Image (cartoon, rainbow, N blue to C red; front, top):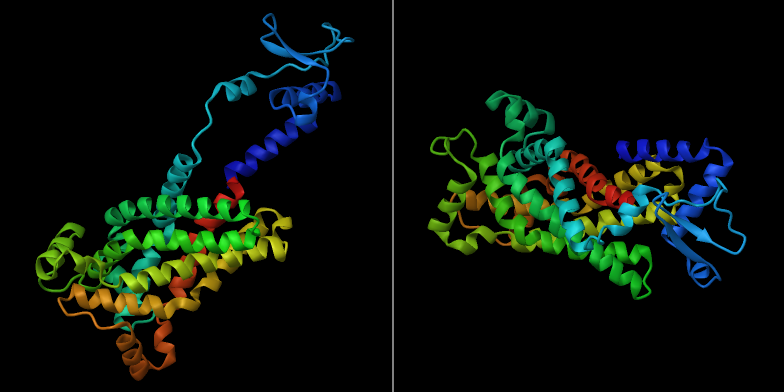
Length: 353
C-alpha cells in the first residue's frame, strides 16, 4: 500500500510539474497507446518513425519539427508488446502472497492466542503470557510451516473464487454490494476444503503443546495419528461448522466493507477510508463466533482421541457451563485477526482493482 502511494505521488508530481507542452505530448502518447473508440474512427492515423523510436499522430497539418508531437514512451511500447496476464493466474498469485503475508505479519500469533483462549477458558492476556512462558516469543509463530502452505492455498482459492463470482454477478446486472456478498460466500466455502484438515492439525498442535506424549508433534505426525486412529475422513471433522463459518466470515467481511466503501462513501477519504471500511467489515464478521467456538471444540476432541459430538450438543453444553457469553469465547483476538485478514484480502485487492 505504501509503495502504491509513493508511486502515485511520484508519477502524479512528474506529470504535474512538467512543462505544458511536455504534458500535452504525454497525454497524446497515452491516447495513441490506448486510442478511444471515438479517436479510432477519426480521420487520422498513427505512423511509426524509426528515427525517434516512437509514434506520431499523422494529420494534414502535422509538423515533424513540432516538439509537442506525441511520442510513445518506451514503457508504453513495452506494455503494448507484453501479452495480457490471465486474471485467474494473477489472482492465484495475489491471493497466495497476501494471505501468507497476513499470517506471517500477525495472523499466526493471533490464531494461536485465539485457539488457546477458546480451548482453555483463559483470557487473551493470560493465554499470551502462557504461550511466551512455554516457548518464548517464537512460540507465537508455532505451526508457521503448515500454516504457510495452508495460507497460500487459502488465499489463492479465495481470491479466485470471490473475484470471479463478483465479476459474474456484476456482469449479470447485480450491484457491487451483491457481488461482494456472493463473492465472499463462494470464496469462503472453497476455503473450507483446505481449512478443515489444516485447522484440525493446527488446533491439535496448540491444545497438546507441552503435554506428555505430544512433545515431538509436527503437522505430519498429527495428521498421520488421526488417520491411523479414525480414518482419513476424520481429518474433515468439523467440516460443516468450518464451511458455515468461512462462508459467513467472508460474506460479512466483503459485504460490510463494500457497504462502507460505496453506500457510506468512505472511499472518498482515500486509503484511510479503505482501511476503515475493512476494519468495520472485519469487526462485523465476528457475529458468527459461536460457529468458530464449536469448530475448535470439535477438533480439540478429535486431537485428544475422543469422539466428536454434534454441533447442537456443543452449543448446549457451552450454554450450560458459561451461558451465552461462553459462545463468544476468544472474540477479542478473533476481532483483531478478522480486521487484519480483511485489510489484506479485501482492502488490498480493492485498491489493486
